[in-house]
Image 1 (cartoon, helix red, strand yellow):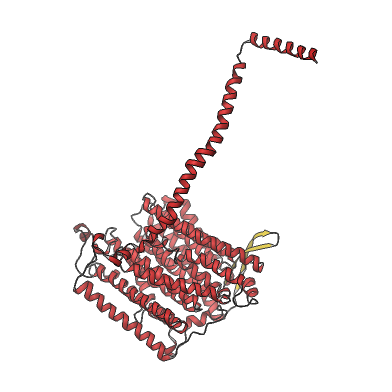
Image 2 (cartoon, rainbow, N blue to C red):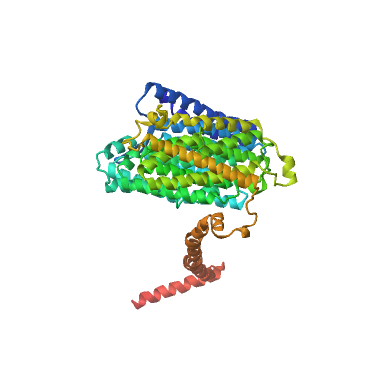
Amino acid sequence: MIQLAWLIPLFPLLGFLVIGMLNKRLPVSLSGAIASLSVFLSFVVSVIIFNEIHQVGSVPERILMFDWINVGDLNIPFSFLIDRLSVIMLLVITGVGFLIHVYSIGYMQHEQDHSRFFSYLNLFIFFMLLLVLGANYIVMFAGWEGVGLCSYLLIGFWFKYTEYNNAAKKAFIMNRIGDLGFLLGIFLIYTTFGSVSYQEVFNAAKGFPDGDAAITAITLLLFVGAMGKSAQIPLYTWLPDAMAGPTPVSALIHAATMVTAGIYMVIRSNVLYTLAPYSSEIVAIVGLVTAVFAATIGLKQNDIKKVLAYSTVSQLGYMFVALGVGAYDTALFHVVMHAFFKALLFLGAGSVIHAMSGEQDIRYMGGLKKKLPITHITFLIGTLAIAGVFPFAGFFSKDEILSKVYAFSPFMFVVLMFTSALTAIYMFRLYWLTFYGSFRGTEQQRTHLHESPSSMTMPLIILALLSTIGGFLGMPEVFHVPHYFSEFLSSIIYRKAELTLPESSELMVMGGSLTMVVLIIIMTYNHYVKKAVMPETNEGELRGFQKVLSHKYYIDEIYSALITKPIDWLASFSYKRIELGVIDRIVNGSGYILNGISSLLRYVQTGSIGTYVFGMVIGIILLVALTMIH
């Protein structure tokens, strides 16, 4: 069955082609059904392949589709790699992707251009599957660029609004910056190893010493690509702005799949990063700074989707810290758990926005618990999961990261614990203000409040169930039960880092983390529910550091002042002075000269036969005179 893995990306591609060709002739239910069915079929094939790998324990298998690039000594086949890492990513992409497709049927039912939306979703799934299935860096890069293109199309789906187009362009351009680093890394890989195939590159790399300059340079360049795709400092500002797209887009691209592409790439390249300790330190430091930086910003955001967006940036920082300390399996464990609860939270936010007639500001919500019972309980489960409350998924994966980081560096552990506290604060702030207290919206919104249709609530229920039980795949060592997730991935990790804690220390980490979250829940409940303290509705009321957080440290303004405006000035100067003042004058001047010469010569063409005869006579006389002179 593994040889049929090519069907997995084929189904979404066919869905894209069918929906794209039929376009507006399809009703929303049919276009949504075709798109959902194509992803579901991919999920079925992925489950079958997973079972085969799990039961048989097969070795990584390469599937050659066709010869792709043959230039001189360069031979790059279009081939897929099926192993334990890729099959886990296949399950996440197709499984969560299917639920988001189903949810979109209800969410987009009043959208006239629904076929274009579903075709874009299918195309995105195709490229994401291509990214994780590729057996070499070039196929991965093709999928990498494809998801970047689809994110541009989906973020700017409502292209009639200028701010949405600007958000789409911002995402596209910032990803291109990271992609340049990734591409340079691939060039250096080929120069160093003479191949871009994973198997050949990793086998050759094992013969290099730790800290080799070439491998260090390769891993740093690859990490630049990961920083762009997975929104790490300084290439993170595109992701919060990407919330301009429809909410299912936020769930699919910016929670479960696209932003985890950088994590996947580093895990896939774990052989190289294990041999480059300096690069791994950079990965951990950048992840740590990003995690705490984004978490602080989330404290003062009032847009329900922006809060979740900065939460995503922070959680990605967690994952990169795990990668940097060598806990690759732990990072992937959190990727999967994060896909469950963050997709749940985004879709829950979409359900709230749907009920609130498009309102996204939590300051004008409140009291939605009774009106949206399914959305409320599933959103609560997602909030408990991301905050790390036992027994929900986030407790297990975040606790594992904290334990591994504590074994690596107590200082980094303290920073991550602080970040974990901030996560609980802004998430429960979001939860209490949205679902508790009195309703603060308009009377028209109050009369419109209703629970979402079953096509939207069923994916919420399934994701809530996964967010509840998913964590038991990776039980802490202190419980003395198998860590199924880590065991399944053991063959993928080149050199497993020894990051174990004594049972007493691990229990301390778990107990301390859980106690901290419980105290935060009580504190935020007293603040936002009992005392009914509301966020400031006027920016002028903010003072000091609160204003800095509300404006996201003014990073966008700094980028605008230091990068965007100078480039705009240079472009304007080049256009006015060089393009118009020099190049256009040369081109237009050539035309003016030719026109002037032509204007003079046309007087010779009078149309009078007598004039022509007179000219001929004069010419003959001149010729005879010249002959006689010589």
